[in-house]
Length: 378
Image 1: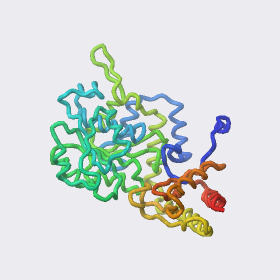
Image 2: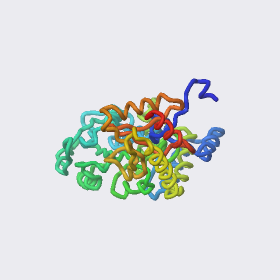
Image 3: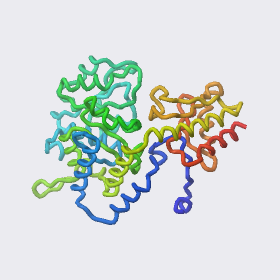
Image 4: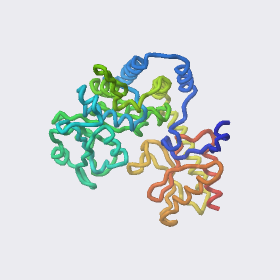
């Protein structure tokens, strides 16, 4: 196998659909769709548009487009709000002039590494509210004549956050669009419509997580005018004798990724979500029962639904081992030992708690996780 030739080990993924481990596992149907696309030539712009129309109809939303990952979706959505369909701005981004609307507002409680990426679109990120609470007046006082949009990172429930419905109400009162980063907010499948139903103008999902598409895909749904600008930004335009590569050119989407995401989304929407949840619960119950035999490990607990606002997604069963009584770094130390084994096992650690997520565990890998932890505990 090529992985062996490269000297790369397969990982037992008890963390989840994270980019660092390759996203998710693709179905045979998704791989077949990529293979089909790889053998033909098509008009990419036509494919892009018709795939978006197909997805919009499938989800019952105004418009949709496929992007090269959720972060690309955030950048292009931000750029679309800044440009607002203006050809001059589309050609010049990420450079903006003094009179352009280029400020994007983010709650202090939503400060995270992805907020910084918005500057790639030419945005000036303005944080509002405090690190403890956000009120409507904080948003109102932050909106000005250069506000291009409000970015809402869907990390709820989170104490003190100004909820999406209130953000939408205030922002729309000033004619300001709202973008939702919902990269990790599937499942539940209903979220494919819930954020739009709440009034968001654009919603960004990762394709490489629960949807089951390649790790370098994403989906943006929402207002047609903004979606059309996003698609426009992904190509190049000729003005007179000069051709301009636009902001999204480095974020182009291959024909293989387009067909893969359409296929994966069809499968995801039609999936037996109740049955899938039961399978995950069976794996978690096995891990809890097995790990409970050890007197040297923390008593494993079922985290369902949610654990504060992490780990995500919040509504799936997860086994949690709280190492609080074993030293301040005990959970990380155990995680490092799991990673150093053969095969390496990756799990999520936060606040000295080790989380075991069943989402990406292959058949019987929950047994490997239990066996290794019992062995390490002694």
